[in-house]
Length: 58
Image (tube, rainbow, N blue to C red; front, side, top):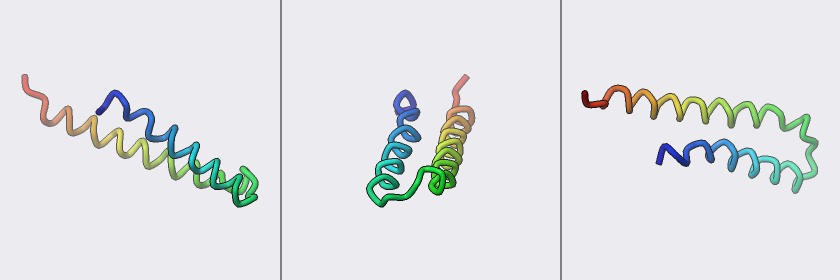
C-alpha cells in the first residue's frame, strides 16, 4: 500500500484540475486547493511513516 501512496496527491490534483476546468474557474483562483491537497497528502504520508517507525520490529 505504501508503494502506491504517492498516487494520492497526483490523483487528487488531477481531479481538482478537472473540476476547475469544468466549472470555468481559472487555475490561479484554485491554487489554494492544490496547496490543501498537497498538505493533506504530506500529513497522510507522515502518519504512515510514523506508524511504520513505531511498529517496526527489531
